[in-house]
Length: 128
Image 1 (cartoon, rainbow, N blue to C red):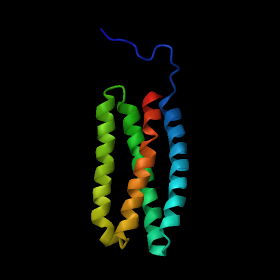
Image 2: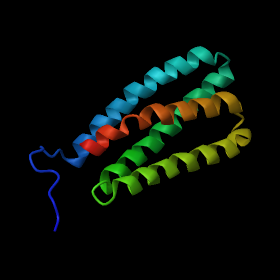
Image 3: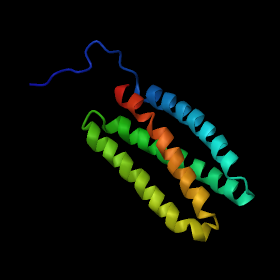
Image 4: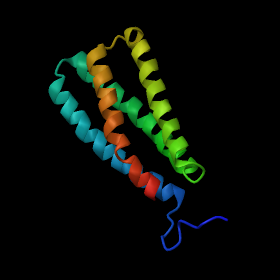
């Protein structure tokens, strides 16, 4: 026997939820970008922070889409899959920094920061 857990709640379309979280991610990442750029002042470090922000944004959009589409199937599995996606991205980025000519410390710290702050928005996606 299945129980309807959505009874009484207004359902928003997938696109509306994704647009709201995309806008939220932009705001959160802009604030984090400004803070990171205040800490890392050299031109190479600032370039690394900007590239990390772009990568994190793309990965988090994919993660939000995965989480939103799979949350009815299994929330924990969907959340774990997005965590694996972030971890794999971090590892691939870390191994490619030398080839990209980016300084490791600002690049990795900023990518982890962006992933962390945007991950805080995922509970809103799960509830929507």
